[in-house]
Amino acid sequence: MWILALSLFQSFANVFSEDLHSSLYFVNASLQEVVFASTTGTLVPCPAAGIPPVTLRWYLATGEEIYDVPGIRHVHPNGTLQIFPFPPSSFSTLIHDNTYYCTAENPSGKIRSQDVHIKAVLREPYTVRVEDQKTMRGNVAVFKCIIPSSVEAYITVVSWEKDTVSLVSGRLCISRVQDAMLTF
Ligand SMILES: *[C@@H]1O[C@H](CO)[C@@H](O)[C@H](O)[C@H]1NC(C)=O
Ligand SMILES: *[C@@H]1O[C@H](CO)[C@@H](O)[C@H](O)[C@H]1NC(C)=O
Image 1: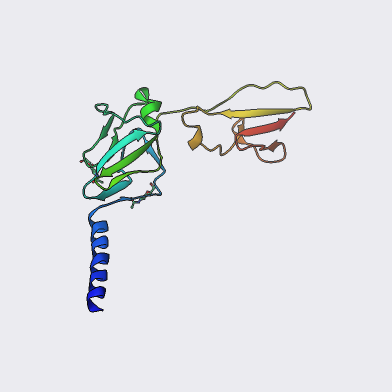
Image 2: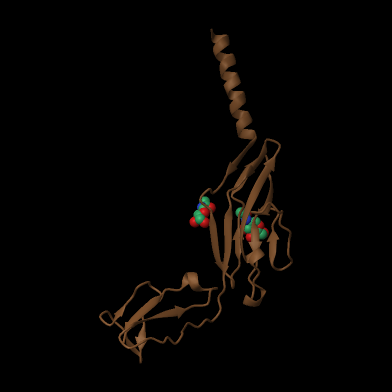
């Protein structure tokens, strides 16, 4: 009986130690989106890891393995993907607004992280404008606040003004946040 118990214990111990010595796991499953400023760049650690040491590789969501672009994008030996700061004129959708994933591989196998959307926000001056609208007297005109698409997702329209006077409800209704409707 003792011998049986001992050998059972040993086989459990073996399985356990095998698992400890060889494994692949996800470090941060909640990492799905990285938004960074073009002026700072970003460092994204591979969200997958393992024991014994793993080979980490980054890919585009299309399955293409990514290559180093000197001064623009680099994968460090520790598996951290770095996107360097860049001027707005060097913005490239392929590099600065794309979906990536990382794989971790060792003798026990290979795992693939979930997709991580890495997106740069350009820190550049921008202007918003309103286009002229024509309407018949007594009808409604809709004015749109026109925001450059590069910053649109990060801009909220906080007020509309006419001759520097803020427009409030009554003559103005906000149909969507970005639009103002006026009756003449
Ligand atoms: C996991 O990713 C989230 C989202 O980017 C981040 O806020 C958090 O700090 C990360 N946690 C770890 C342990 O790296
Ligand atoms: C990986 O290496 C880079 C460059 O040396 C470093 O900046 C980064 O903090 C490292 N990341 C981790 C997760 O160790």
